[in-house]
Structure formats: structure tokens, C-alpha cells
Amino acid sequence: MAKIVKTSKKPSDNIITSINDLAEHIKYKRTSEGLSLEEAASLCNISAITLSKLEKGFEGVRFSTVLNVSKMFGLKLEIK
Image (cartoon, rainbow, N blue to C red; front, side):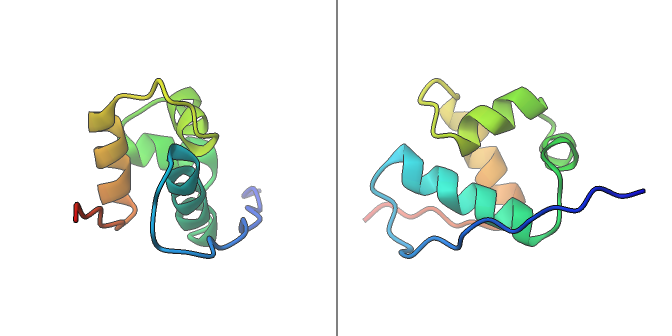
């Protein structure tokens, strides 16, 4: 039986000013698509532990991993 994924709270702003803001967006995208942590991590070719750390705003995740996960979820990061 498939695990039911509860959609997390939608971020209130599209402007990311901290790792926690980015974490909210990534978690929202994953949960809104109905993907478990393990399923999403597999699609991103990373461990579930790494994705969990990213979704919790852990600052030790490699930037290349952040970019890869963002891309996999269709998030566009811009520098202005």
C-alpha cells in the first residue's frame, strides 16, 4: 500500500533570503507532488538523509546538491 504524503504548508513568499526559506519551498514541492522523502531522494540521486537535512535547513548540504534538487523539483533560482 502506498504511503500517503501530507502536503506541507505553502511558502508565503517566492523570495528566498535564507536556507530555511529554500527548505520550505523544496519540502512543499515534494509533498505537493505526493512524493515520500525516499522516493524524491531516489529521483534526485541522493540519500533520504541528505534530502531530509536540506528540508530542515541544514547548512552543511553541498551547493551542487541544492542546485540539483531545486532543478529536479522545477524550482528556478535567480541571482539579482
